[in-house]
Image 1: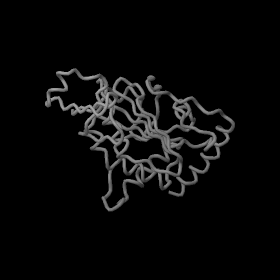
Image 2 (image 1 turned 135 degrees about the vertical axis):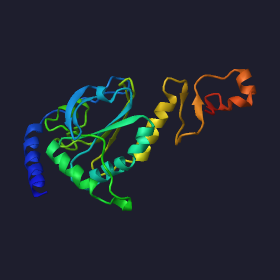
Image 3 (image 1 turned 180 degrees about the horizontal axis):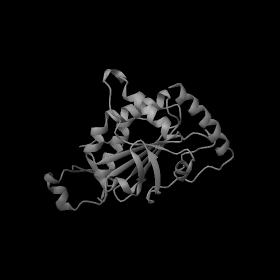
Amino acid sequence: MKKTILFSVLLSLVTMVYAQDRPNSRVPIIGEKAPEFTAETTNGTLKFPTDFGKSWKILFSHPQDFTPVCSSEILELAYMQDDFNKINTKVLVLSVDSLYTHKDWKKAMEDLNYKGRGPVKINFPLAADINYKISRQYGMIHNASSSTRTVRAVFIIDPDNVVQTIMYYPMNVGRNMDEIKRTVIALQTVAKKNYSTPANWQQGNDVFQLTKPTAAELSNPANGINEVAWFMIFRKL
C-alpha cells in the first residue's frame, strides 16, 4: 500500500508538469461518433467503443484513485453491475492514474463491506490514461478546475457508437448511479421512435407522442393517448 501511495505521488508530479499550460480539450458533442481509443485496463487491452460491440456504453471518468468520492462511485457501480447487464449496457471507468494503481485500488475496494452490503467484485474495466490522450479526446480535463485530473464525466453511447448523453460533475460531488441508469433506459425507450420522455420520467411511465394523433387514434381508448394540450400529447407504451 505504501508503495502504491508513493507511486501515485510521483506520478502526480510527473503528470502535473506534463499537463501544465495545455489547452482545454474539445468535448465530443451529442450526435457525433464516439472517438475511438485503445487503453490498458484492469481487464486487459481494450479498444473502445468497438470491443463492447452492439451494447450501450458508459464511459465514466473519475479524478483520482484511493479517494473517498471516487471509491464510493465505483462501488455503487459494482453493486449495480447486474442492473446494467440487464439493459445491455457496458461500463468503462477511466482516470489518469496508472494501471498499477488501478489494480491495487480495485483489490482494496473489493475487500470492503460498503454500507453493509458485503464485498463485491468489480467486473468492469478500469482504464489507465497517464498520458492524458483519452481524457483530452473526450474533454475531461477542465483547466479551470484542474490541469492534472479529470472531472467527473459520463458519456452514454448507443449501439451504433453515437454519443447520446454527456454529463459533467465537479470533483467534490458524487454522481447518482440510479440517474445514469434511468437515463440509459429513457434513451433506449425513445431510440428511433417518435417519442420523448417528460421531466422526472421513470420506466413504465407515459411518454410524449411527437406527432399529432388522428381523430381515430384519439377516439380509441386502447391507444392510451391523453392530449393535455396541442403541444403536450401523452401516450402509454
